Structures are given as structure tokens and as C-alpha cells.
Image (cartoon, rainbow, N blue to C red; front, side):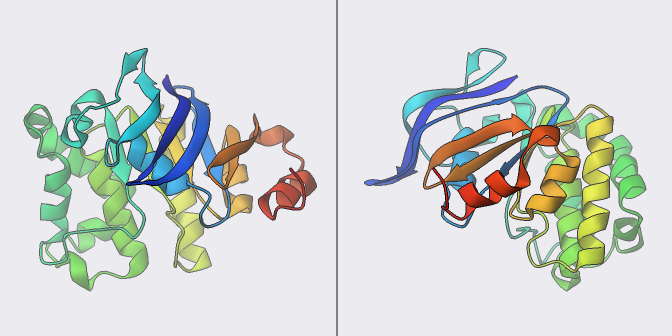
Length: 235
């Protein structure tokens, strides 16, 4: 299990997260929703060691990740799919995927995992020789997801996968997330599309202004209360 306990983090002198505590059970999809500026992306960056933690802790199976280098996270089974795709535009689709298996322990499984990713995303197989910078937004998001899967992560952190995509592509992406969850991949999903997030999630956290305001099983969420908290009409 990945746990965040009483976490404070931010950027320089500006603190964003205030005593945030969350639990991400293995084998489940946990959604983190909230308005812009809630601290969702900052939380993922703090978990991955991209920004320093000033107070509190992040633990994986009771082992502290605080102070660990970001490049060590893949070896511990974590992978981040960042907001905005961030593919290597001047490299081919296949080379982008190979970068996901760059850490030495993952290289022997490169061919097997390429086959797995191409099975999940047939469009990437069709475009495997194409430069990533020429892909559509939806294809680039598939590539970012596929690259994250190349390290066979135990836990996948995904930041705003539906951002800027057409509805038909959003439904396709979420169908893939549901399938990954059914395969036993633990997923932490940051998403502003509350309807889609709740439909696929096992549990949900609502964040606003760097704090957690709600933590419930997705099936038990009261949509009206959720929206009142989201838009600061309550709490």
C-alpha cells in the first residue's frame, strides 16, 4: 500500500499541501479530484520526489520514499504519467516506449512489454515508426500511458489523462484504465472529469486549497455534496 501521512510540500517558500493524508490500496483505482489549484499535481510530484517534502511522509509498504531520488522510483514499482503527455517529440513511437524500459532491470522484458503495449494500443503499433511529435493528442496520451507501462509498475500515477481530448478518446482511455485495474495494476488517477473518474474508481478523494475535504468509496459518493465541496459551497 502507498500511504501519504500529514504531508506538507510546495515550491520554495510557497507551501501548497497542508497536512495531507491519503491511502492507496493495492489493486484498486483511487481517484483524486478537485478544482484547478487544489494541489493534485503537487501531490503526485511530492510522491515521486520531484519536489521536496517539508513535513510528513510518503511510504510504500511501510518503506519511506521521502528524500528518495525520482530516478529510483521505477525500481520500486512506481511510474508517473505526467499531465500534458510529455513525449519525446523527435523520437519514434517505439523509441519512446523503449525509454520506459530504460532502467537496467526492465530491459530484458522490453520485447514482451512492447507486445503488451501494442496489444492495448493497436494505434501505437500502426505508428511505431512515426515521430511522436506528429501524433494526435489522443495518440500522444496513449503513448504516455504505454511508456509508463513499459516498466511493469505496481503502481501507476496518472495526471489528467482526459485533458484536451475529444469525448470519444476520453472514453477509450478510461476503458483502458478500467482494464488495467482489472489486471491488478494499482492506479492513482488525478482527474477533473468527476463523472468519468467516479465511474472507474474504487474510492475517491476530493482536494481543495491543498487539503483533503472528502474521502469515500466511489459508489457511496453523494454527487450533490461532492459538487458543493468542489465549488466551495460547503466546507
